[in-house]
Every structure is written in structure tokens, then in C-alpha cells.
Length: 466
Ligand code: URP
Ligand code: ZN
Ligand code: ZN
Ligand code: ZN
Image (cartoon, rainbow, N blue to C red):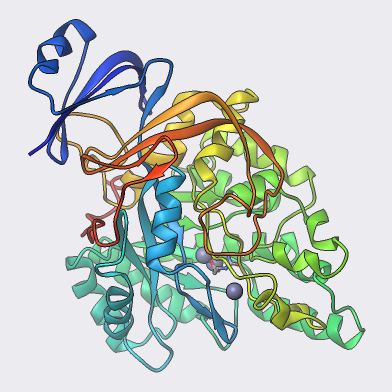
């Protein structure tokens, strides 16, 4: 068992900032102690990591990724191996990815398939949500056994008819089951039936390029679905977590529900905070790089998302990392925007982008840690093992240089995708050292991790529910 001491940094958690040293014993944090007390450890430590002038934060917890996800006749370009390595480079030490119940198959089949893709390949610890794409009696029963195996959250889609879509009756039944077994229902809230009508009309009128993707996926169709999901969850008596919230009008629905005391939670993603629908109009089909759902919105939505993150109307920032290469995958939708594989890469960039918000005074340092590490861990039953630095927690720790500047670029990123959605953006702050369960996996520009170090995490149920 290796003993390490992280000396001289500013330890930041969701609740405090202190000048302290962190003592790591094997895979766990043993103590967070004042330097005078930590001094005694130095003689017995196997390694002393100097964090002078740096922040010492919990490893990022990204609760929304799609590695190797089949979509639109292709699959997202990061494998569990490449995607988790990129996550590690970006200061994220836990992902929760989405296993998918195949249409006509069972959640169990989906889970087995995702275990087979991930097991022995991940650089960092990982867990799964389950996408229910065929809700029936058997799938509902299986939800209970999956919860017992640590799959404690289930995503349902009000969008993508014929693919992942569930109707309101199926959604209600899944929510009733979740009310019973303690699971958290995650909702892709967009009215997919109405969107498909608008898609067909746009294509028939010759409006085929990427910018029409955002026009047919109207903010009010996000708000309407969000409202409907909230009402269905009230009827079922189940909590609700709305994923990738992008529209002001949808945030308002979540805020109203929360003000009314409901267990309704919202997540947004860096793309909605830092990019706008203007990107979709880039010339030469480049707009396809920015096709994701919910879509990027006009700039005025951004201020409201930032406000919602400050007031906790939105509680989590995850990436919805779902990379498709521009040259050979986004290309599938040239001449028909509805065939562009949906998704944006970002698992490597989230911690840095959110730190920009700290630099710019939009959020505090503690809120940065809370949004990126602590709340996601609590929301999905991983806390206090993940998401904080405290005695007994896994030693998933990032030593972060708040002053180092670098430029986000596909030239230098580790994600297995041929573009970076934030290409050319200069950010202040950089990951220097990353520990995963006590092992140094990234340090000063060198990768020291390995495929298979990451372990599957059986999750508890959501810790925000009484
Ligand atoms: O465009 C997106 N978000 N792709 C990933 C699938 C999903 O809906 O989260
Ligand atoms: Zn979604
Ligand atoms: Zn997603
Ligand atoms: Zn490719």
C-alpha cells in the first residue's frame, strides 16, 4: 500500500476551502490535515506531491457520457479506453455512461453488452445508467434487479420516435416502478412527435442544412416535454432528473417545480453554456459539428442557464460526451440534417471550461466543485466515495493549476474525434496531476494510467431523496 502526501495546496470541496495537506493511504484519503500535523507523515510517505500554488479538488464526476454508442447507423467514436483516458487528462475520474436496452430486447441484454465493452478497458472508475427504450412488463420487473446491481437510474426519451422513444403511458409506468424501487428517472425532454413533423416539413421545403436542426427542435417543445415529465412524475410520486437542459423556458418549468417542493432536478452541459446556435450556421457543413439534442440555443438562453446554476435551479453540469468524427460520421447527414449523428465531444474539457466560469466570476470555486464533482456523485449514489476529499473517500484527486493558460484544440486533445467544439478557445487553468484511487494517472503532461485500472461502481440510490 502506497502512502502519499499532497502538500501545500488549497483544498477545495463543495463546502470549504482550506490550506491543508491531503494524506493518501492506498486507494483512500486517510486525512486532510493542517501542514504542521501532516508534517509527521512526510517521513513515512512513499511520495510527496507538491501542490504549492495549486488547487486540490476532487476528481470530476461526469454523469452523462456515451462511449461507443450506436446511433444513426454509426457509433460514437470514443471507446471506453480512449474516452476514459481523455476524461482522465481533463481531470475527470468517474464517468456514468448509458447502457441501452435494445428495442425488442431486455435491459439485462443491454447491461451485459455495456459491461463487455467497458470491463478491463477503463482508465478511471465507471458506472452505468440504463436507457429504457422498450418499456413493458418484463423490462419494468428487471428495473428492480438492476437497482440491486447498482444501476440506480434509468433514462427515458420523449424524443426520437421509433428509436429510443417512450410514450406517456410507458413513461408513467417506469416512473411508478422507480417510485417503488428507489431509482431515479432521467428524462430526455423534447416533444419528439411534434419535432418529427417539423423535420419532415423542413426537409420537404428544402431546408436541409445543419442550422435547421435547432429550428425544428423548438425551445417550447423542450419546455412542453419538461412540463409533461414533471406532471407525470408527480402523478407517479417519483423524483425526476432532466438531462441536458438548454432552453430558458424549460429551466422555468424546473424552477417552478423545485419552488413547489418537488424532487425535480436539472442538468446542463458546457455546450449550452459556451456555444450558441450560431455555430450551426458555419459554412461548408461545419455546422454539423454542433448538432446535438437538445440543440444549441440562441445566445440569450445562456445568461439564464448561468443564473440557474447559481440559484440551484440547475444542479449538475455533465458533458453528454457523444463524439462523432466530422469527416466520416457527421458527413452522414449532408443534405439531410436529420441524419447527422447527434452529439458533441467534451469529456476532456468540462473541468477547464467550468473553471473559466470561476475566472470570469460567474460561479465560485466551491460551486465549480459542487457542480462538477459533489452533486453529481450525490445525485447518483456515489457519495462520499466519489465527489469529495474527506477521510475514507476514494483518493480521486486533481491538482489543478489555476494560472496555467492553454488552448483547447483537436491538435492537442486526447478524445478520439477529429474536431474540438471549443477549437482555439484560450482557457486559464489546467489539470496538472490526477490521482485515481490513489494512483497517479496523469502528471505534468505525462500519462501514467492504464486500461483496466478503472473499476465498475455499484451505485446507491439518489442521495437527495428522503
Ligand atoms: O445529441 C445528443 N445529446 N446525443 C446523445 C444522446 C442523448 O440524447 O443524450
Ligand atoms: Zn438525451
Ligand atoms: Zn446523452
Ligand atoms: Zn472517424
